[in-house]
Image (tube, rainbow, N blue to C red):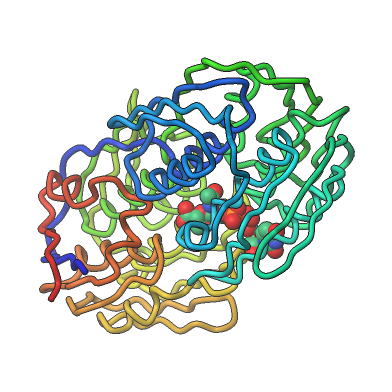
Amino acid sequence: MEKIIIKGGKPLCGKVKIGGAKNAALPLISSSILLDGGCEFCNVPQLRDVETICKLLELMGAEFELKQHNLKIDASNINKTFAPYDLVKTMRASILVLGPLLAKYKKARVSLPGGCAIGERPVNLHIEALRKLGALIEVKNGYIEAKAKKLRGREIYFDIPTVTGTENVVMAATLADGVTTILNAAQEPEVVDLANFLNSCGAKIEGAGTENIVVSGVSSLKANKVHNIIFDRVEAGTYMVLACATKGDVEIINAPYSHLHAVVEKLEGVGASINVKENGLRVKMKGKIKHTDIKTMPYPGFPTDMQAQFTSLLSIADGNSVIAETIFEKRFSHVPELVRMGANIRVSGNHTIIEGVDHLNGAPITAADLRAAASLIIAGLMARGETTMFGVHHLDRGYENLEQKISALSGSIRREKSE
Ligand code: EPZ
């Protein structure tokens, strides 16, 4: 087991470089299943989730070479269309192999991902949509058993604009017969990145990034394409909040400004000054954090993946703030840990009511999920005294070299083995 020790109270200053987007890398790597050969991804983040999806594809018969931020993968000779529970339970995004396996190999046996600390995380919308494309799907003994002689395009309406649900259907539809129209699709930049890559391989996808995506099926998808993964808007947003929370001055290189409008708007609203630079953003904060209200929404609304980080920031605001979490039913595991540090936060239904306090105090705390871990690191760096954070493995799923990047901003943070 490991723990992270933080000494808070110092403003973070300097430059930090953002990496490739985890939530773009995972569907992109899964989409390699669709191709008639190998492909190459650049700007791949070095994260546990990326290793997990590569291991999962290797289990199925794919070959890959992951070196630094470059991944060469050939998943064109899959001989096992099976995603086992012990792997899927460590990363829910494994569900992203379902659509490509069905489209290319006509069958798949994928473990139900199950819930996690932020919610029940059902995949009913994925299953219903793939059934509409002609897949025969049974759910039994904790597994999704799916097969399809040939997927046929048709209109699919998503009750909720599910991100990985949209990605699964887009991938399945690329090799289906006919046209698939997805209504109320997710509009996240990661969906656009996936569509751009697949179109470079010969797919016919239009409307990615809007609520209506149209996919005209093709017979096959070309190999040997090279794709640069977009930068991670959530990693960038996390460092922007960190700069603000520690009253610092940080240049965030490669921050994808066009994907961060909601976050920029909210940070300016609490008093940060944000300058767009030619290759990123500069975030400066002086004086008291102003209180504000936030409502998480599907993209381009305020991202749920930034909610926990803002909860930490607003815990020392000059008044009361209310955050409505409309995407996940229990994404509040960070709240009791912040309260242990002296925050005054109440959870009521899907809202948190935050009464700003003068400061937080360091304490031993435990992270229960990836973005909660990020929010607790922010709290430790804002707090007076020393904080010890457990649950470090959650952090490694989505943040590359976090301690090194924070230390380079003169933050006092180190990782130790815990007894
Ligand atoms: C993606 O998860 C992201 N993960 C999440 O990031 C992100 O928080 C989420 O989208 C929302 O933006 C990846 O892209 C790998 P959803 P996903 O399907 O696709 C309900 C992080 O921290 N729903 O858009 O699983 C669901 O319960 C992670 O990087 C159904 O009811 O999220 C939720 O309430 C966390 N049935 C809502 O839709 C379904 O079949 C949105 O979920 C699917 C979803």
